[in-house]
Length: 125
Image 1 (cartoon, rainbow, N blue to C red):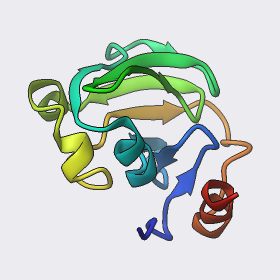
Image 2: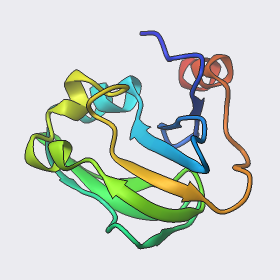
Image 3: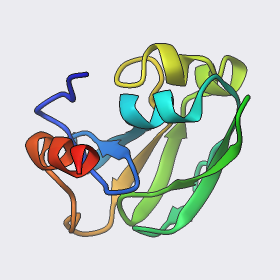
Image 4: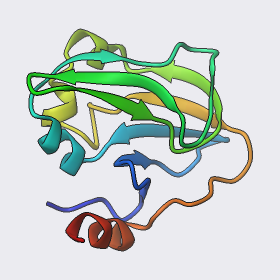
């Protein structure tokens, strides 16, 4: 499994894209998607709501369990991926592309995020 080098990662297995005009995209990693199993439902934060780094902002339900979704950053949700709401399996089939979860306007600089190499070491340990 190869985690894209340009992304940053949380220890809770979310990824964050670089900010484009202050807005970053959030999703879960392939490692997390595989651990969850087949995702059948996604509850995402509401557009306009504020998410806090490290706090629960939604949940993903799979055939195995229900897992909390954590925000890797603090900011305002500017969009959710309606395609994932309609077809949650995108989280499994395209975790780094079509399976993104939400976009957030950053409130400050993200802290405590890992590089791809650091995340690889985290999941290997």
